[in-house]
Each structure stands twice: as C-alpha cells, then as structure tokens.
Length: 169
Image 1 (tube, rainbow, N blue to C red):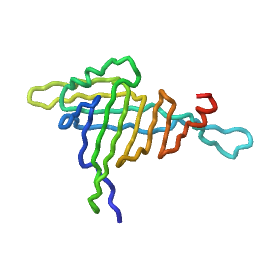
Image 2 (cartoon, rainbow, N blue to C red):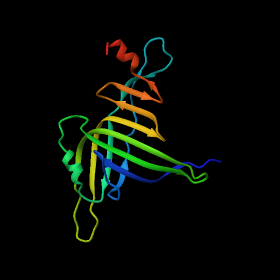
Image 3 (cartoon, rainbow, N blue to C red):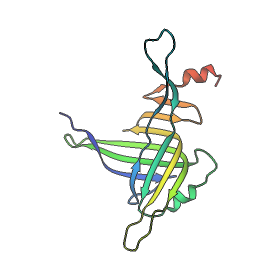
Image 4 (cartoon, one colour):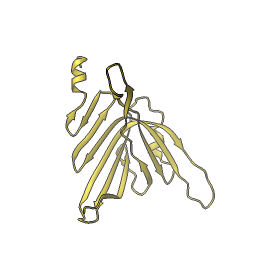
C-alpha cells in the first residue's frame, strides 16, 4: 500500500521576494474546462464540446499587510504580478520528497485588509485573476497555460498547436 504525498511545508514569492513565515495559506488555481453540452439529430445522447479553460484564480492569506503585494495592485498589464508557490510534498511510507512549484502571473483583483482587534491576529487576503499558470514537479513541467500567448502544454503535448497553425500563428 502506498501512502499519498502530503504538503509538509511551503513558501510563497511575489516578484521574486520570499514571504517565508508570512504566507499562512494558499488556494492554488483550479484547472477547469469550459464545456458546453451539445446534442443534434442522429446523436443518441449529448456530448460536451470543449471551449478551452475557465478563468484561473489564486487566493493567498498573509499574517499582515504585505508591501510587495500592495505595490502590484492596479498594474496595467494582465500578467504583471508574478507569484510563485514552492511546496515540499512527502510520502510518509518511503520518506520521498517532491518539489512542487506553481508559477502564476496575473492581477490582484481583491485586497482584503480584514478586521482589527487589539490582541487578535489580523490577516491580509489577496485574490488574483491569472493569465499564466505553470505546474512543475521535481523539475518536470506537467502543465503550462498561457492565455495571452495561446499556449496550453500538458506533459509535453502542445494542445493548441493545431489551432495556432490553422490560424496562421
């Protein structure tokens, strides 16, 4: 019986600045396809037509207001703010450690300064809309999605190459 790999620790970087000890929680982007049900004459049932990816989003929670994050707010380019997650995932049966890295670029859509109460810990929550996503595990790129440049590569397979070719890109 194999045990699952579990997140043992992580760090978050904003534009290359380490936030070790400051980022309390992260919700990594969900990869979701935009599908539309279709059924026409001669079909025995509906099928889902694939229209690409749904919106990519990232959420992070910090232990206090983050200067570097605040400096990224209101950037004018869709992929200007870069965030990198570096996680250490381990199997408890073998002790094997996996390095999981997620690099995203986008814009911060919401900065939540939370509430303040004397003697209580405060939090700074950030929501980000993403234009770019890359998942790398142990140095191998598993998924790379770049909405601006029409790129979607999954385990080395360029899923949009034929569409780019058909469009003359």
